Image (cartoon, rainbow, N blue to C red):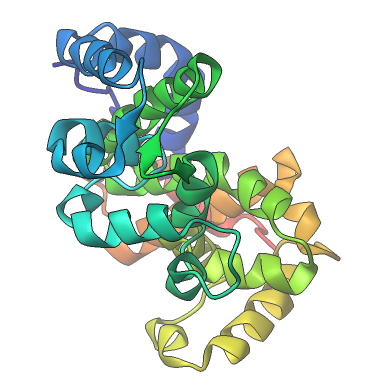
Length: 264
């Protein structure tokens, strides 16, 4: 299995990963295990499949859920079944009570009609591309989890903003996405106690801090590539500071320069 190369931690490591991302993703996609999973996925979903058979097929469920950033959730078969069965048309559907935008995307993309699932070729190809990307992100996380968080943030923030129908909805959706909120909590210098606050207060603080630290006037601005990069830079530097860099720390000189720069 291909192991992503990240020779240095912190923001310098992130810049290296950005530079080599396309090449490393292509190398990862060529792995036999990834190719076999994709072949299996296409074969099983070429024709309609019952919801019960879909849920019972743990391998198929794993691949599908991974394509929505829900790797590991295949152990929650009963929950996934109910989410898919109820769908998104009813405002009282379970997916809205879960509050996880990834589950909402799953239920939206895979409608269940008369107890069966049918996913057309175009939709399957999109899911395959997402599966490859998410599988690579997981592999990156095994080397450096902060890099995986940064990757997920850069890939998910635009989706969150585009799916939300109001500024307030964006902030609440951010709070419902673990990688996105984790990166922003680090970028905005929020303490661990932040997560213990009432969710409405959390949303207000995110809004205030983002305006101050990232210089944005609307959560729509979070999709600006320069703002995305600034958030990731601040997150990576904050995590490096937590580690307490020493002369033996890779990229120590770079960390000191970043710490001393005006990140505001």
